[in-house]
Image 1 (tube, rainbow, N blue to C red):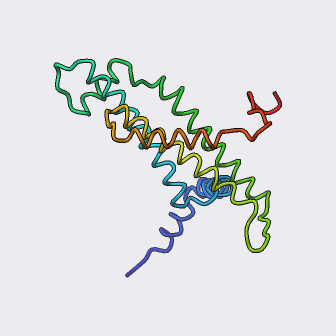
Image 2: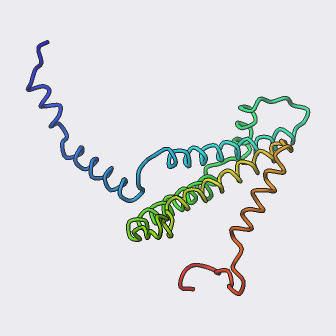
Image 3: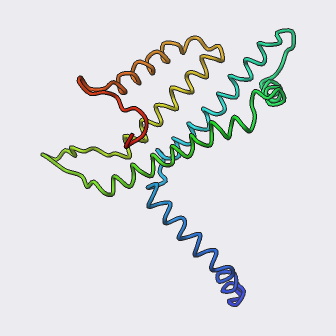
Amino acid sequence: MDYNFKAVWGSITDCWAIKVLGGCGIAALDFLVGPLDAAFIALWVLVGIDTLTRWLAIAYQTMNGDPTRKMTWGEAIYCSCRSGAINSEMMRKKFVPKIIAYLALLISANVLTHVTQPKFIFGVDILGSIDDFVSVFLALTEAKSITENLVELGIDALAPLLIFFRRKTDQLCESPPGEQPPKGGAGK
């Protein structure tokens, strides 16, 4: 094998500034968000499934609006887009802020994990992992939303699971006795 060293070196050094900036961006993202492990990827898969099931629920409503016409799911989603039920404004006002909020929460939790070092008493981390808690909470929120969408699709067998999710969410969001739930943002 005859390698042309100048061509290989040229391809390595070509656009080196972009490669350095890309590497710095990836390093910053890794520091802010934390490891891109299976849990992180699974959360974003759940967000994608939630979006898809939301579109299917809207399409199901479109299909039920015209019971004389038989449609495939693809046609129903297309008709929903054409009728304006699924549109870019809805995505911009609901989906994009959700993604930004999730990223902000994940970044905050990961940075807090760096700030609050584990405190061990008898071998047990008494603080727990803040970023794990936030990730699990967001994943459960997505699972609840997916279940709501599937119930809207007419899969009534999932109604008990939805009741379970709502009950657990209510329990998690309860304020301790004597404490009022926060209203508005911090400092208000």
